[in-house]
Length: 237
Image 1 (cartoon, one colour):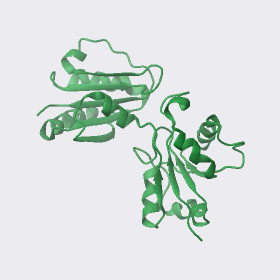
Image 2 (tube, one colour):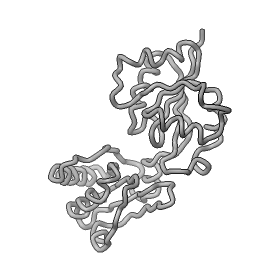
Image 3 (cartoon, one colour):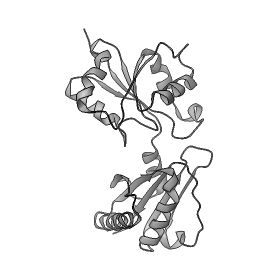
């Protein structure tokens, strides 16, 4: 029996944007997939229902794939593929496998001869880099900065130093309720000529993507609400 394919299914990164950011390719492919791995089954079901490509989502099968999933659990999670069924991975936000636990399953698929099919969709990291005007040839994503303010400021200094040495754009994200604290630390810690981009609520109604020097950011009274945000910095070498 031929194995099924593993589909990487993009989700929205801002609420109620399905119509504008999820392409027809995704909608056309989904009816061929009845089995899914998802970080949160409840939100995955709600998302698929909102696309209106299934007569009913009740017959669909879901299992959890999140940051707690162990490699030893993947064989069981991949049983639908071994039986010839297609399997889809759904991230909580954006594209599976990018800053996302879906990478674990994708690696397993490659190791076991399973075809991986990435579908086009919104990625906050790529969109923010595109719109930043910073170096798109050399860049690195660093996930989350430390929670402790002192450790976070030290990390910011290290990222700035690396950016200068390598002419490399540094990207990182933050839990929305810490947006303001991170921004405040950035403008406090970075050098005045360092470029800083704030990419806020990308694709959403409150979208703001702005690049400025830290010296100019210090003159502004930017207030960031609790919506997803990507920060980018670059020191021109």
